[in-house]
Image (cartoon, rainbow, N blue to C red):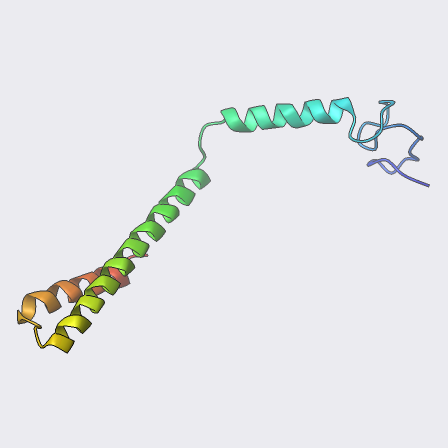
Length: 106
């Protein structure tokens, strides 16, 4: 025996969610409710959660960019060390600043 969502006996050929509709689940009313829900959701203003999600996405992008820059600098450093061409403290100062910035970001 099948039951509707309210715990009542489900009549054959009726919707489980809308037991008074003589259509199998999902019935036309189910489809209409789903469409209304989509339209309401798409027309809503962005929520605080949406803003936080976008902020986190931007932070991850920033971190990825910093990591890429650090990797490039480290490869450059490795090449210069191999060639004996490491020059001055400016390179290491910039590298240190990038590492500090990457560590401080949330």
